[in-house]
Image (cartoon, rainbow, N blue to C red):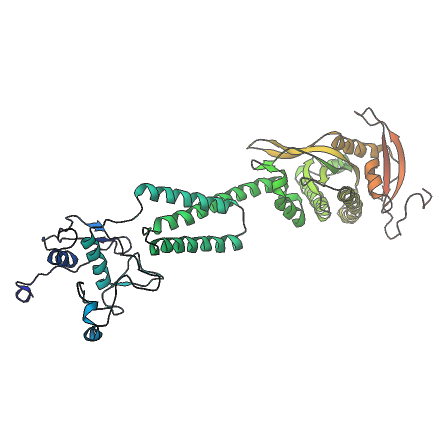
Length: 469
């Protein structure tokens, strides 16, 4: 080969490729042995606008733009057709001869679209044209590239922060990415700089991914916080509603204080002291767990939320933490609370049968229910946090439960249900009841009118006035 090239101008045809992705972006005008590259040697022989001078250092290739969208950067002819071309077509031009065959001398370049590669002979032509014209790379400066990366990263964050569902976010992200590439190609086709799209694309997708991960982590934290307060004591529909409407009452990962109108439910066991005396500590706890578990299931089945156990007492609420906006919704919560109390009495009937068969005493329960305004929110810190109800409504429900001790009649054989006037107004006509009268409850200056709910299982329920009550 050396003897064959002796006296003939020649240069190396090797192409420099980035180690990261194997893409040709730079041209090396001289090899380690000082031999010029093929385009550099051609430029020296042909002279050119730069006087035949060839850059001494590697340079980034300034890819020659297409003269029109449907034309190649350089005219290309099959070798066997050259003899048929008019002589004037090649006059004053440099003809570069090489192969354009799939799999032979094909390379990845920034011009490659959809995985297609660029023939090596065309890459040599781009480098030669740049040397002859004395052009430098029209790539964006480092400052503009950094600004573009930051802008796309911020745009990706903004898109993910919009809170779109995944099925909408993914196609929007891909469409945005395709739009970026199309804009870059259009800019280059119009004679603008060729923008290296890997970093901007990574910034766009990275911004979306980082914000999505942040929102997902925040969502998990918020959900864990809510579930710690409610999950064990609510039905699945209520849990879904709480999570769906979390934006209306959640702040900083915890329920924010809010004023709402809800129905507070307070129950206590009659005869609990007798059970305590009859059982040892361990059986007593197992017995109480069985009772509470059965009652919690009833509350959850009526879309209530059990907030806490106070010894053998149960505090629950209907209509929180998602605030009700209409009177119909408030009345529906009150009716669910009353029907929950009735069902608890029926459930207790079955439990008493089983306990008596086991030699345990029968028990009854008292329930106080009141509907009205209150303040609801979480109290406590990182170590312990509870969802609490503050205000006169919660206190009145507890006082009505205690008032049940003075009422001789029962709602059902094992239950007394005493409700306040607002609750009775919401449920009258759907349940039966008797007026207990106006009672001065402990701790309250104004008398409260109370009603005793009657469980007339199997009877057609009529309004109290029509029933002669």
